[in-house]
Length: 571
Image 1 (cartoon, rainbow, N blue to C red):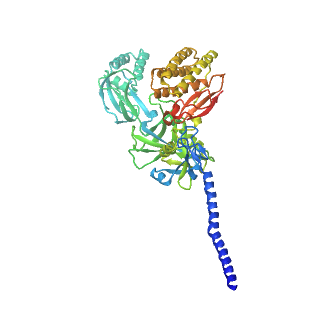
Image 2: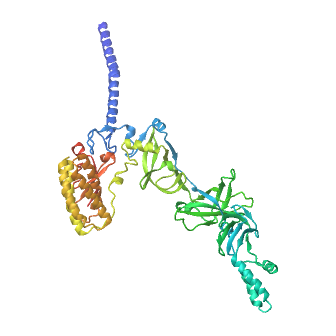
């Protein structure tokens, strides 16, 4: 009996132990499995699907792209956190591409303007030595440029028949001076008018015979800069013989291009160097700026005056100068970025903004407004905030990566940027009425391109061309005529070409002109939709007009029938 009780107790204990062990092994495992299932389910819910050709598409489950119909692919968790127009590059990719960035800050903005010029003669000290005696030059005492002359020095000898005659008149008047003193005085005054001094006149009278050769003497001291006559020349009174300049003071004349005129003022300080005086830097104030531009060179002249007592400077020497201007006010600060950071797309200027991530960096395009250029930098007027990080080296590489990933880039701006740009045109009522008929034919042409029917597209384009030619006479402006001319050119190309792809390429240009005109029609029968396909035109994008908001792509037809989206409505 005791033995049976012990066996029962032992069996119950084993049963309890077995239940306990089973709970420990299987119960705990089941709970952990449930937790894992919850996590897996949560992970599935957090997964986002996108299109490789249209990264802006994000859906919580797999399927087809609503734009192009391609299969969606899963995005990584980190890519999912990116903005639609931002793309990511790894640290290794950035190092291989030699991409460097800088944080934008503010400071004093100064423009360093470099000018080139030449040493010139001070025009105020340049003197034209003329002959005061008419006659033939018998001898040039100074016969080369660069020779120094002193005031009163004989420069040339002149034979003057007229002066010989005047001397004979003087000698004859001397004989009757007692009876006719006025005649004698008039004869002397005639010689004085030729700058013959009283001492020379007295020598003529004492000799009793005329002097046939007279000297031309220097009126000023200086350096002969130009010979203006040769031996044997017959000169009238007042004709130039030499150009003489005083080189104790010289001018330095700097060239100022039209774009530089606002940066240089009279009184601006300029530091300059002369090639022939290496190692020395000089400083002066600009004392004159030519108010007129040279018609041939399109430059003005900025002038400084420099002393040259030591004769170190020679006219014609090349000079380089630097004018530095602080373009910001005393209390204002300007934002300055390197030129290498800016990409130009026509009138637009853009930069790439960097945002740090756990692995690598994110980049996105930003349009900015630039101020004046400062050598290798630009002043930023709008579009950046202090502290933002921009790409300054490898900008084109970053832009190429953005294009490959289908993100917004220099060549692939936002949809609003690539939609048709229109200008205001005044359209007459008769023109608008006729254009509505052309618009209906355009929609027919679009539909046959959607159906990929090149033969029918050629026929419709030919008929539409005849309608458009009639309407061209109604054009009221040169701009409207230009649009219609392009429309006719594209319609003729479509009608004569049976190649579907070429027809579609002509249709793209045709649509641009149609959008420009229809945007100026005052009253339309119904809403017209401007639609855009980013993959057309070699991924540059293309627009077209549609009567329906439903996308039917004329550039791909059945291949990608729904690739595109409505970018604007014309009502």
